Length: 317
Image (cartoon, rainbow, N blue to C red; front, side, top):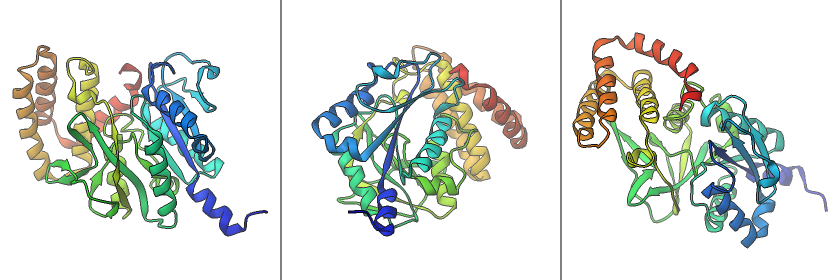
């Protein structure tokens, strides 16, 4: 029996494209790909409901036949960061009639239960066009990474509710694990190439809020995720931290007011004191450099300088 136009539209609204972004990570090394493979093996129906795009920002292409499940593999000849991968995925989703994008890093603990839960939320919110995203709770150990609520000059964890609800306040959620409505991302022009890695999630949720979109908080779902900012000994490098500092400073200059920018100076000073206890003093030196830049240069100068730096730095992380 053929579907009615309404049924076809509804099917397109809930069809989901999962995009896995790799960087210098083989298929075998990706925790996310392993989790997807296990979920598809345990529940074959999931494979029918979820398209998968594997986007590889690494320097060398991999053989698509090495994937443990059927997926579309794309290797980017120029590393455009996660923003470039997500914008390409928006185009792919639109071509395939996928109403949602499920964003995944290479090191997220994906399970079948999580995938079924997110697809269920996609169905429940399909007709609520002002809901731009469905976000689970993301944890790195005991630390709640996401979602987080913006307060003055800082952000705090959003209290975990008993069930799902729609949040209209200014919040952000980590990219990985978030379910993003394709049309909402198209409406705001997609992800910013300026924030190609760090702060890409914070910046896109900020613009979604400016456009009066809301976010569905999936209080019943959670994921474990590794976070470089919480592990300076094993995962963070000075080059990676410098990239983060530049994005953080740029976001403050572009989107926060004078009072919040002044408070940011105090936060940088406190960070320097804390990082003096690290074995590698490079991190404290980088923070001092960032503080000195903000004290000695004008905001307009920094905005222009950071735009030039962002356009040339993607391949150096």
